[in-house]
Amino acid sequence: MKPNIKDLRADELAKFLLERKHPAYRAKQISQWLFQKRALSFSEMSNLSQPLREELAREFSLSRPRILHRAEARDGTIKFLFGLADDVSIESVLIPESHRLTLCISTQAGCGFGCAFCATAVLGLKRNLSASEIVDQILEAIRSLSGEQRLTHIVLMGMGEPLANYANTLRALEIVTDGEWGLGLSPRRVTLSSVGLVPQIEKLMAETRVNLAISLHAATDELRGELMPVNRKYSLKQLIDCCRALPLPRRKRITFEYVLLRGVNDSPQDARNLVKLLKGIPCKVNVIPFNPYPESAFQRPSADEIARFQAVLDDAGLQINIRRPRGDDIQAACGQLQGEHTNLSLRLVATAN
Image (tube, rainbow, N blue to C red; front, side, top):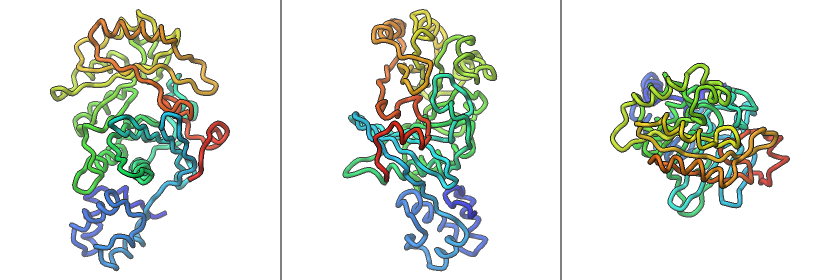
């Protein structure tokens, strides 16, 4: 199988061109065709010579995922089920809000971290996505936009753990944030969510300027270890010490995500433990009432239980956001992504692309 040209770094593409007696500046032109003009074939690259276009077509493939299903929720949220070249499927979610349009993308097919409350964990890890497969989700979502719609934010919070696929995730982030030949999105508008892989978090923050979100979900080692097996490798203390030591620019904050599970981690004492844990860290907390999915053992807390938890955080002065479910009627809300064509066909009212 020919290599995918979108997976080449800029220096790798320039080296390929120089070895074949083409000027290195063509690399920027090719990248602009791939990521800014969203070319679907080498023949479209009209400012390249015909021999070069033919050579590129001989040496490389040019990917485009299939949209197996597209489902739209009552609130306007859109979930895409993408089919990849090897018939693995992944999901992305487009979330419209008043002044922003956010795309939640996947970095792995499935996930190997086994968080107890997450539908993706049921699948296990199928494989890492390539950089091109990560970016192609964005390109296809952009192609689906109409009128004056414009994608404003990217969150790496879909299927998988981005930092367990570090090299491909970093390459994808380079494409997303480069203004000369890439998608040109400001790093301030890109957020990566991690379950807490401490060495990779330190590396990411040294090598990029994207926003960091930590999937926390418990404020004690015992409970977090039950909900998130990763905590047995990187303890809560290691994770929080890492977050405290990160050299954050002024005004930048870490986001801590906390899924509220009824009767598990939603008591006022749980909230007080959370306040104590995060004291002194520049942060905000996204409180996410659990989004049920088929066969889940957990329940969403009541409105009163959510309010009691929120009140403790408010009284302590923590900056918090109670995240309302988006797209939960099409299983597109946080923690619900499964990427399974057979499951989706049974439960979604969806239209084929």
